Length: 445
Ligand code: PEP
Ligand code: CO
Image (tube, rainbow, N blue to C red; front, top):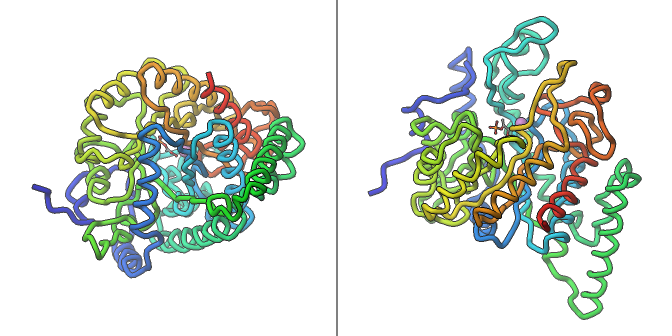
């Protein structure tokens, strides 16, 4: 028999990584207001994404999940949304063209505001402060006052997510994602680079293919004119997620309406914890990050809990082991899940296991470590006969200098030039396009 569940069920369990809201009354008021807000996404959309992910689980499609580590209230503009969308569309075009399989596109966008932290405090310029937990909680300025959690920020996060999603829907359904536009997604700063030129060449080939299809009478193919683009974020702030969880009237099923897909971070996947309890009751497709400490038994217990009926597309496991560990730590997990029969989709997050702080104090990642982890992931998947379902990356369309290496050969000395992230270092537009080409090459080996 199914257990009774409602969106507040998590409150009976220990909830890791929640802000220490100083004003409980203000918090309750905000949650009340959020409960009255319209949903951002609908049950039917979440089900469509689940069908797409089912194809990933079955080895018929590839997942590209990408976007900011932490979306910013300050860097919020149409241009920044469009630039992120452009680079994701470019990567998806490269992956589709190079692999011949459909690419399911999921943004870390329109709600990716809350950050889990390994340490309660961080020291900036000699001052020790509460760690930054994302703009949905407080400001990133390095002062005590800025770091006080303010629940009203959850309303701002909702509004920014709504506006971002609105623009994404307009861009992806209103002509911008039309494959005839494949050239237009290449940004100026990219076009001059080897990766940008390689992209131009591919775009020409795609144009020829479309012209050929049209000449054969295949005009007005809707799949070429618009694309499906889904939103996702880490389900970290459970009060916020609870307030936006709604019952689907025809079926009585519960859906989180803050995004199409929610995932659990590596720090909040405890089996008896509040986060797993919350995710177990919603019907959206779910992701779970799986880091180096995860054991086969833990991963199987997560699968049983989140996907008891073994539905393809329900559960995405996102391995984030680090380039040096993926080949030793991932195979036992792949093998155990395969043996259990759980039809999960596997993806590789090659970012979070490869982060380090350099001598100047910049948190960074090396492009070649990112590529190496994806390569290691593909190899072990092949060995275990598991479909390497996709990649999960942190990127921005902008010309930032946050990750080392790439064709620009970004060095430690370059990092401070345009280091703009409020949390983890992101691949810039060039590194992202280059990564997509490298992924295609790795998959072909
Ligand atoms: C993240 O995706 O930004 C993150 C914090 O990841 P993880 O939970 O894998 O550390
Ligand atoms: Co991150």
